[in-house]
Image (cartoon, rainbow, N blue to C red):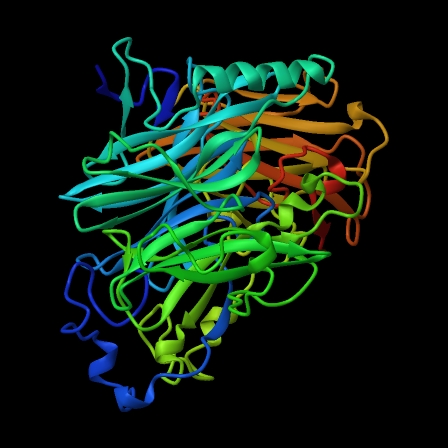
Amino acid sequence: MKKWIAALLGVAMLSAVGCSGSPAGSDPEESVSESESVYDWGDPSSWEGEAMTTADLGDCIVDSYPYDERYDWGQSVLYDEEEGIYKMWWCRHSGYDSIWYAESEDLKHWRSARKLLAVEQNTTWIKLHVGKPAVIKIGGEYKMYFEAPATLNGLKEFDNNVFLATSEDGLKWNILSDDSGEPYPVIRMTDRDMQDSWNKSQLAGGSGYGYYGLGQPSVTYKDGTYYLYYTHSLAAGDRMYVATSEDGIHFSEGRQVFLRAGSGVKYNARLGKFMFAYEYTTGNISRVYYMESTDGYEFTYSDYTTASLNENVLSKGGGYVRGYPDFVSDLNGQVTGYTCYVAYMEGKMADAGNDWRQYSATWDIHIAMFNPAEFANRTMELPNGKPNDKENIVPYRDKHVPYEEQREALYPGEESRVTASDLSLYEGKTVLTVSRVSCEERAVPGDIGATVYLRYTEDALWIYVRVRDATVNDSDLVYIGIDEKRFAEKASEITNVEIRRSAIAVTDGDGAALTEGIETAFRVTGTGYDAEIRLPFRFLSGDLAGKTVGFDCFVYDNRASAEYKSVVCWNDYLLRYDIARFGELYFKA
């Protein structure tokens, strides 16, 4: 018997609407969006055209990661009409793939990013990572279908299956489990398929891959039936299958619908058709294409030979990988408006002979909008509800922030006592904001930050750190690295400062304690903690004006956590602790 468990054992868990034009769950012929009431969309009799119209809206930008170096994929985006926001669940590389959540008002700029689901301990059916969520909300309950591998051969994972989790708020999830209390798939490979898959892996010298399995789900709901589309990749190769269910748990036997994996399907209530988005590559060109079906089984194209003739292109351009597309929908997994939105993964293709991970840092979730041919002559409506024109499209041209090295001036001050309570001697001096969020070491965004105040006297550097951190953890830590020689050749020439709630330690790069002339002070505040350090110069002397030092500061919250620590830095958000990546301070007279 299957039952529900909170996602605690083996899988750790914590704790947008599709087309424009009508609210979620309403009759698309009767509903009118707010934007329609203030903009003349023209005579409906003139909207029909010969072919769909499309427009590119660029990469989704997650505000926590302006300098993003992690790939994002497998997005499921719903629009919550009641809250007036898009909600996205997606897969992000965080040590291993994990499932994340964020919110947006315009489908472009995403806030409140958080990790929801990550594998901390392998179970029988879920190992190493989880991915490709597909979310729907029916009868007040969120349902998330996702994939995970059941078999590992080293770190080579295979034998994927489809799992189900439910939630009241979309953040705290319970995974469907078996009688033993372990997560159990709702769509799974047969025992025979898994044995064949293992045999295949052993033929490759005992360390190869088996079959990918069943995964990458996409879900839509129509007339009391769940249509779950998923990748079916066994001995016959990649296929797209669909299975149906009346309760979202017990599914029919899968049926093949297309010769391509990783596709997305939604029912369009306004057109009365199922919409299918798939990626197809010819040579060095990868694009996302569109096709339709009246019954959810027989689509415009069923194989590559005919699919290559498709002229309905949702993404345009060359030389880039575009994959895992799916449509933005309402909470029921339906599209109800005139202008539709599709999201997919876009990035730079690997060079010939190289693994896809060569340029994995370039892979992001990308969005486009289109009007089906039935509404091709109607002005496209942007995801924020405004008509598409030269002015309204401007925010959708935003891109990721280019990385720039931090460089600031250091100003002289006066000798004083170290108290960690008096900032008056730092007024008008150097102020650094430690706020670059890092995703390294499986870190997640957190409510932390710090301000570093700096000044210098004839023979010492004075550092005052004010940390904002409302939660207290024994593994909270501030690390400061100082390179007086600016690109020192020996580790012993680096000065390291570690500030913990219990002590402040100063060492060189080899770990040897430094104590001579060093003064420290620490105090807990209502919003975090303050620390002050006087560091005598070890190598600098004489007239300091114009000289430079390498400097960086890293602030950790709950560093001991494997999956849910947070860390911000001043310069090196990649956490390399490499002096070549330190920011730079230069002395002013």
